[in-house]
Image (tube, rainbow, N blue to C red; front, side, top):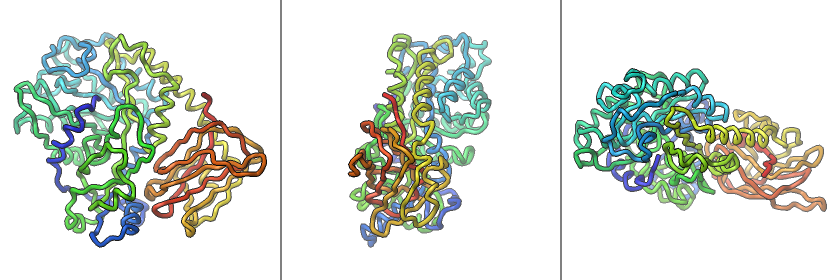
Amino acid sequence: MRLNAYTLLIKAAMTATCLLFTPFLQPNLHAQENNFAVIDPTDSPAEIVKKAARVVPSARQFNWQRQELTAFLHFGVNTYTGKEWGDGTESEAIFNPTVLDTDQWIRALKAAGFKCAILTCKHHDGFCLWPSAYTEHSVKHSPWKNGTGDVVREVSEACKKHGMAFGVYLSPWDRNSKLYGTAAYNDYFVSQLTELLTQYGKVSEVWFDGACGEGANGKRQEYDFVRWYKVIRKLQPEAVIAVMGPDVRWVGTESGRGRATEWSVVPKDNLDQEAIANHSQKEVLTQPVGDMTGQDLGSRKVIEKAKSLVWYPAEIDVSIRPGWFYHQNEDSKVKSPKELMDIYFTSVGMNGVLLLNLPPNKEGRLAEADVESLRGFRRLYEETFARNLLTDAKVTCKVAEGRLRNVTDNNYDTSVSPDMKTGKAVFYFVLKQPVTFNVLSVQEDIRRGQRVEQFTLEVKDAKGTWQKASEGTTVGHKRLLKFPVRTAKEVRLTIQQARDVPAISEVGLYHLKE
């Protein structure tokens, strides 16, 4: 999805935000932990940091983050016109995939390790990939299956068959609808949203961008985002709402790259503090305001100026091709397996979730070049991460809670809270024999908050001297660092600064072959 207009359009959406609450209680967490926190004017900087450390994801946000890999499927009339943004005047007759095979789409994604597929059910051109009862501009007037087809149904059923989560993209901007730019359009949008959320089974993600150009009548629309959010929460309460939504934010680029310091806890300064106090242990249902695309969203310096804080993680989108819809002349420009692996490191490995776009072609299949690149990516992934080289290492560290073996047991649900009384913690790993590696993986159990602010990896050389191999700032759900190849028998991971005692879920060393 092209988000070039995002900065412009986010302002319009923000004007629609207000306070909405729905009941929510975090399971298995301390009572004072929630996915938002109010900053009192009398709070000291240290108290603000402590509050930030106790902000945690909602259940839906946590489940979303654990997916790591999600896919976008851009498909529609643009596939047949060669455009990226249609103008709404396209004839329904041009949509005619000859061998639509959504099973092939989902099989390829599943084999590559993806956990969710989001379909562009309606793009800016207004053409609906399902037979919507509220417009004639849909597949019901196309020659495909003589107007009896439903792409949304075929994708949702393929996802269900292969055990993959299903998501929907419904463009707020509609260049075909004559209602666009009027109050009636929000009713129209809710009607279509309701169709998607009630006729196709479970929906795991609802994806909006902020595109808000002129419609067929030359008018612009004031979107009723909060009303839409309420509909989603009512009809699909487990679905995350992204990226113009309260659950997931856009990272700010379409490069597949997150920030070197990616905080999931950010300021939310449009909240009414008294209302929050009156609704403790409730979930906030509005998106934060302000610049969510800058380089520093959640440092101590930033949060000290906030009125409130919220868990608002980053989704990192990029297309496997230069464009978002299929164009035959881009068959030779598909990102290579190595490029996809690099993107994995700069998205999932930077505390984000990767949203990779794969556009089906005019026939209705994923092009072989795209599928082959996915296969190659999966091979690289498995060759690299098949085995944690620290699995059999002896681990020592002063511990406040948990078993030391938890950090190398390949089980995210077990963790260790180190003793941080001195302000830092050191994990020592001693292997039976030297191993060769160039990748460090560290994970926090984010259900206990995102807390690590600075860490260092060191190796003991042949002379018995500790040498720095790599260092990082934030960890969050997953932090991956690449560095020059090292061979060592003893390594140590030092957490040099944290907002509170972190829950370290996994620490791993791996060898990525370049």
